[in-house]
Image 1 (spheres, rainbow, N blue to C red):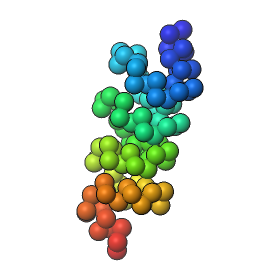
Image 2: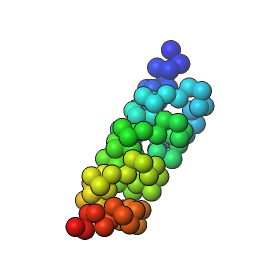
Image 3: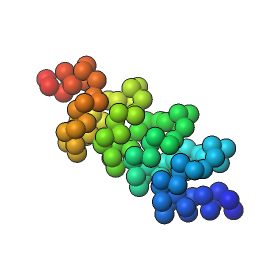
Image 4: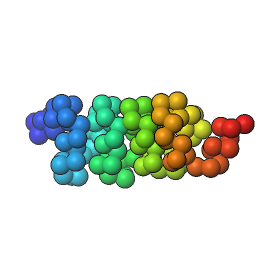
Length: 102
């Protein structure tokens, strides 16, 4: 029942993820929050960062690219971020920018 209450709260207000003790968090709860608001990536424990979470965060908030683990930054993700917000260019690795420029 507690997990259901947490899920409902996160769906209403993804920022509430910040106050949830880590022992109650799951990757799925984190994903539900990210689907609504990508900038909650800052509140997601590193152990739940995944390609899926990163891609969804980028879809809803391209400037979160700054907090996405480098191993998940692909050319495609970076192009998507640029198309949504040119401000994201500051956080794209030079190597990927060079690939995009070709």
